[in-house]
Length: 221
Image (cartoon, rainbow, N blue to C red):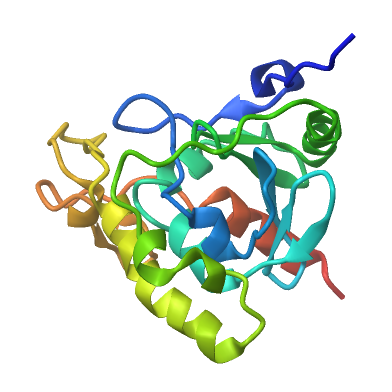
């Protein structure tokens, strides 16, 4: 029997709900910015003890780039969803990107590893051409994983701001006053939490990965 593509929802992975409705989607070429250069449909991300992201696809893992991952995970359009703790308290939270739909899921480490193992042997579509403008076209996808640090830095310099522009345009209604606000219009409080420009309310605790880092650091000798 020909293997079928596994369904994340059936493997204890939870779609990250977007505050403006629907689910969190990753910006075009987000995975390339963090350091993924493969061609698999599903890619996972989690943090090492030193805070650097690990990128995996069921075939291999590598240490990715901290800056772009932190920019994404701390952005107001993503932060509330990670704060919802969709990993259900797992001590090793992962997020998984479906590169075909661009949807982001959360799950525990073992559940994600089993899911990716199943996905490796299944047929997969090629990631579709994005319908939105992409910063990859401007920066050049070939530079995303370039071993030359100068060329890699140039990729981040051009592509990074375009990821932020894409994230800033996401609708993010204020949970306190209900104002229709784009994510990029939120300010940042003294503790880093998003602050509504209309009512001044800050909301949500630290992102899931930050909470994990604090737990790990407090248990270190």
